[in-house]
Length: 463
Image 1 (cartoon, helix red, strand yellow):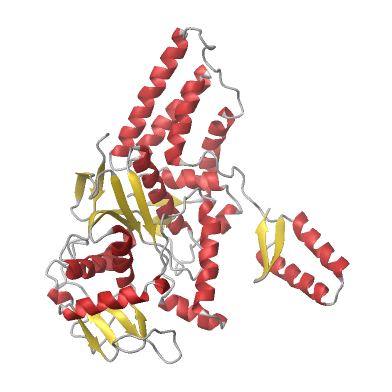
Image 2 (image 1 turned 45 degrees about the horizontal axis):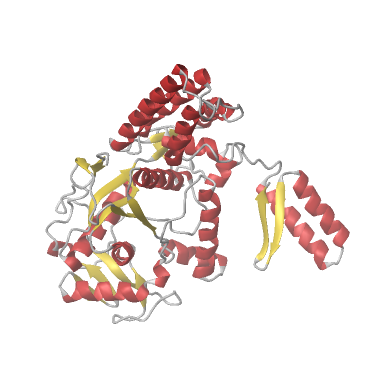
């Protein structure tokens, strides 16, 4: 089996990958908080780890991939109150929207997709263990992790807790023993969603959920924990503190973090008004070109998004897509000897494929691997060899963009106009003016919008 090396955020160096269980890799990647549509930053994370998962499988490992949904969160509670709806209804809607958007990028579903709301009992048990060991303490119905009790705190992020400033992503509460301590259980406010616990009605803190769910599905020690660089601190640092305090064992052996998506060299964020959802991008660019773009740079490097970059990706893919419109030469007929040209093409393709796999084995260097991919495309254009084409398809089992949608789905009207026409049709149906309702449906269809009547209301999609 080929040796594989990953840069481990925990040790700050490349290390040879190995697994706790023979030939089976346990992989946990932090999932979305489903209170809004999936954005490009999510897209990069899940495309990267989907491709790493595919690479490990191609390299001979079995992979158990777990990716959670944080369906209990302050943002969800606040948004559901704004919408006057139940928090599970809101999170359920955006979980479905997540799957709609992310599957178009060729991201395969996780083997297990646990939700916080389905693991409350296990979370309460974990908090109780922390309290019993002196790693957590209660104040008026909330329970906090005592960072001073865990001397290794900071080993992932490299932060010295004595220098860490309270504020910025650290819950400041004058009642806590230290402003740096964080909540593992939060008391529910008046009218807020909560669950009965030994400390009163409350809900899980942000970090405890991943400690609990990763251990349940992958064991107390597993192989890879992944996520975006923004999760290194405090989320992943706190996961380590919680998990290792409970078990006394190494939590995750390898920590992999993908780089930020930037817009004109600035980190993408709602506050800077440079925030793009995947479905917005799909209106202008194909999922194929988006996945290609997201894998084109090394996963640990920042990647700068622009329309020019997506146009460039589409142009590069035009050359690739054309090869599948051509009929390759099938090589020798049954029983006939190989020609020298066929033998040479097959050997060269195998050599390029091995260099491609070697690049991925070196900390999943897709930037270098793409060079091998395009070398094979060039070789096919010269030889028209079926053996070369098969190697291109083998590469795509990891890269995963060749069979995705090649054209953007563009609506010819705005979302506000779509909603207006949906409401117009609903009014016509209520008045039993079905002819008018049908005309409105056809008007939407002509403008690239398909509507569907479902038990939960009218849904629309781009055709």
